[in-house]
Length: 162
Image (cartoon, rainbow, N blue to C red; front, side, top):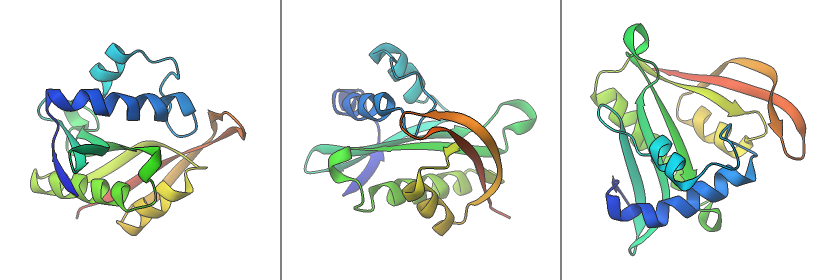
């Protein structure tokens, strides 16, 4: 398994992963009807951000994007998002992507990394994030309309690099 920079040729394998995750509507706040063009514009970061893929045997297994959480006075805090192909979840790919994003942010001098909207039902993701040093710093009750659980909370999570 290799984590490397996204290339234009990767989009053909990244898009089905993004499409499946977004259409499931159970972890991301993206519109489930997101078009391919809009998805590409949202997912593929430009500098100072970065988009990566996890590849094994020529197959893209997952992807991540990262960059400043906000501009201006908030640009010293990073953020990241991760998506893994449903057929290979639970095999450490999400954790590897998160660890890579944390290393990237630390190397660039960010003060920490913030996740703005982690669905409280995303137990596997929360376990990974907490294992890698994140903590839940707040929860917005009922801010996420889960397709089967109804309105649930969205966590704000933070990992301080200090």
